[in-house]
Length: 261
Image (cartoon, rainbow, N blue to C red; front, side, top):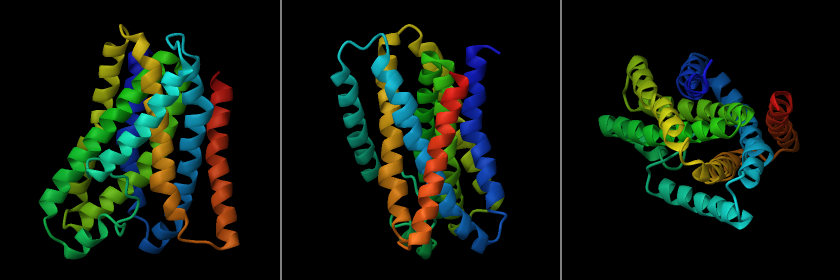
């Protein structure tokens, strides 16, 4: 398969397949979903941090186009602050439950469902477009970097899509319409991947900085969006489970990196 074919394939895994996985997850009982979701979030944290620090960032720093390492680390810092501002503007929101701080009041009101669906579609479309660009840039750097980046994207996409499904269903959308909205927004991942393939081949000097943005994205999602939700439970047993699953996510990335290298 050509490199472009691999990019499209893994963009689909990170986008469309995660939507179907989340939709399947919704078929489970509400009680079982509530029990499993924190475990999924814990695993996603490990996968995101592992991908950022063990794979994406080292390759960005070691890229041949980099002349000053401080430029890369500055890009990571700017990226984290930019994601914070985007989230403040409600253009990019990674909720993992329908009763989160941002969306909880709206869900209880059951109002403006169509507007909320449009907002989710636009916000997720932008998010997935960026994910596609990051995946494409990673594959242009090295095949195994692309695979590991795709794994990290898929790991956080499933709980995110589950949250989006919950919001849409509580807003009055049918399961089929909610599925169609999420599939449509997820297809922008492929658009981003293809755009990166054609746009970055002649602009290799930009690749390490896009990888730095990818690392910033993974770090921000893990630290700002996912980790706070785990602090709701402070029992020693629960903390041990969380740490075990976070470690499992890191180990997954480490093994993928070692196997594919």
